[in-house]
Length: 457
Image (cartoon, rainbow, N blue to C red; front, side, top):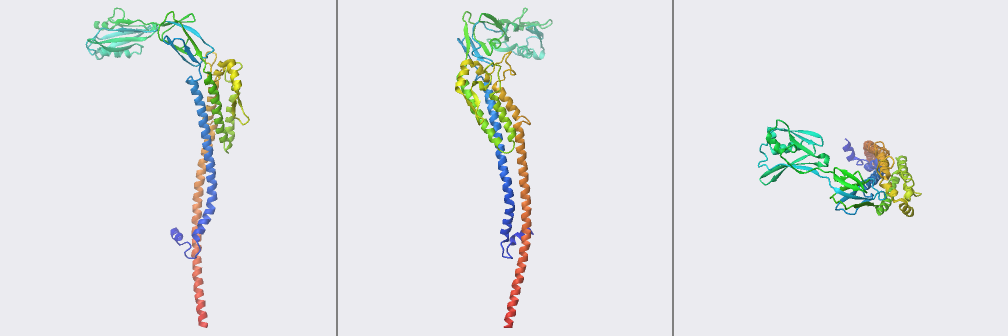
């Protein structure tokens, strides 16, 4: 029915009814669709702006945290003889807080013991119970029919979790088992057979008459730091020099090694500049998002939180504990700027305090609570903003909801306008048919009148 009307519109009356319907439908539809389309474009621009601000905030916080974590901003250890020991920085190392002399007199080592050569590693060695004793702790070992071999013994020892490892190595004429403990004198071990075990099993015991041979005894590392003697069970020492991990490489009695630290001043200067540059980029993203309708007030609060970092105390130092103390200030338009003269003065006064703003000290009195540093402070702002129901989360959800509403509204408009056009087509199709009928009647009457006139003549 509708198709027939459409195909015949304007055919009877001579009026372009099809164009008339199209123009009336467009006049109704286009302003409504354009209004929703414009709102959709604006809302999508807000979504993009908020997403960019979120990405910039996360990137800013992550990059600063990474610089702190990977040691880029830490003072670097210096060692006068790296053939004796090596040093790496950990959180808390500051160039002005440590220099010392270390003399390594003995390296830590692990105890080893080895058996005689066995022709067949899979051959029976004897069954029974054995006891592995390490540092005063006993570990029971059972050699049964299924494990009666050199391989079975090695597997049983490795399964104890005692810290002693067993290896089977090839040697001339067969194989032998080698046991090795952890470094340190307290990790010495014995492996004994229990009464009732096969006497042959004692061939693979060490201690109290066992048949294995001591390869080397367990020793502690021994070193002297500025005249004070220390001993540790390993050659990696993390708990003597604050912020520094030492790796002892060789014993060198009578050959003291000087250790210290150098501060990365150029990197600190660069980091201050980078901090300001990235902050200003983030500020621009937030301002762009906040200036758009929808969520502006919430984003303004986030801007204020970030701006507050400049004057926020982030370390426990008495005089240099804020970004404003090293020459960073807020301009009239909310961006950050650097006073290089003030920065250099702060570095000359106490470079360690400047470093601590970005690489805070960590010891018994300097904790995350007392000395969070800029990175932790920025992380807190970031985490609060992106958390569920945080500023960025709320704004994003609000904009997404509006996007869905606009999409649904546009669909309803299209449905209503399609129905309106269908009504117009029906109405004007009917009108066209009536006009065609009137036109036919008019033509008939004109013919009749003309015939009457001709008869009278």
